[in-house]
Length: 127
Image (cartoon, rainbow, N blue to C red):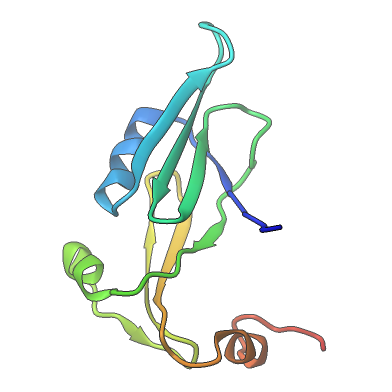
């Protein structure tokens, strides 16, 4: 059995959000309102990562932070004109979409990721 986590990000303008996430490598895989008069729900994917962008008022009521682990950070950092941070757990950048939702883009490959994350101040873990 596998577990897949798919964040639902509340957006006011799904078309604007789709364009922004396409800029960072996501592709739209579906779009549907449950009825013509209802807000849109869009699924997007980048490699094995998936997100939903929802205009529904009841979904994800505030800005958040989504970590998206990637193998090669440099092309994305160059696209945004950002110098990656050298953190104990990874090299990463953080960008914010038009809705105020931040996404951190750490680059994989720093050894024992779980151990480093659990010991870092960014992700305190009581145990």
